[in-house]
Amino acid sequence: FVVRPKRRLVERFAKPHAWTVLNKESLAELAHEVSGLPSEQEAEDEEAKRFDLLLLNLQLAVLRVEPAFPRLRDQVKAIAGLLEEKASIPMVRQQLPLIQEIQEDDWWQDVTTPMLERVRMRLRGLVKLIDKQKRKPIYTDFEDQMGDEAAVELPGFDAPDNFERFRTKARAFLKEHEDHIAIHKLRMNKALRQSDLDELERMLTTSGVGGAGHVQKAKEDSHGLGLFVRSLVGLDREAAKQAFAGFLTGKTLNASQIEFVNLIVDHLTEHGVMGAALLYESPFTDVTPRGPDGIFSPPQLDELLAILDRVRAAALAA
Image (cartoon, rainbow, N blue to C red; front, side, top):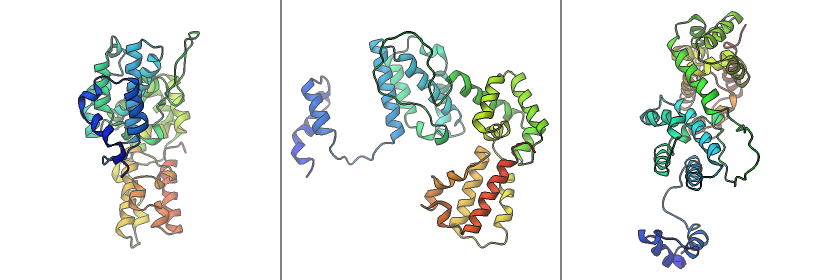
């Protein structure tokens, strides 16, 4: 019933040739008459649509030779850097050559709108995979005005070829040296000494992975170098299971409770540490909408949170 009064417009714009040349009248009809009509198609992911808008603005900046281009380009490079951290996911790994390529300055020399469209089509479905706590790219939609030249910092992330590249290089380097005693302790949930943290800092700075500034930022952002390194190398799965062995012993847990604990183990295996707030987000709320409050008693929940605190504390110097 809602569509019927607009049927003439819907049928006209359903034909491809109607989109060949759009005059002001057609644009007004699309904006005010057609765009608000219901559709049987499922709503697309919000992050994908934001990425679409970012790439559209970037394509327009290329065509119009606008000063917005460097800012928009850096946003795309930063998003690519965050996606590269998810290379273990098959659908991301499939696009990894492109993800790595667009982080290089050479790719952006004489970039064309078809090249940008290829990026949009191949990466729009992946941006939702970026961790929420790291998902800080800024999708802005405003006009740039010419002014005095000045360096601009994008709040929410460092330059994509700076800290995010350091994070990616650090992850690869640390995984290659998992047999080092300090990294082994972090993965096995063993307590660290200050000498272990000093050695980790020395390894990162002398190996060429990053400088003192990168390490300092890592400490500040992650509340300690041990937590930063643990977030990159993860927790050994057996060590994560062992952390919850006492919780599981002597209790009769139902299937939902066991699944919930297994999800925590999965998260710790990938990310190394976990804040209590994440227990109230997906995928945990997919098991129970109320999070842990919905399936665990207060004493059981306190015990779970205490375990997470101990896992976190093990990554700090004793």
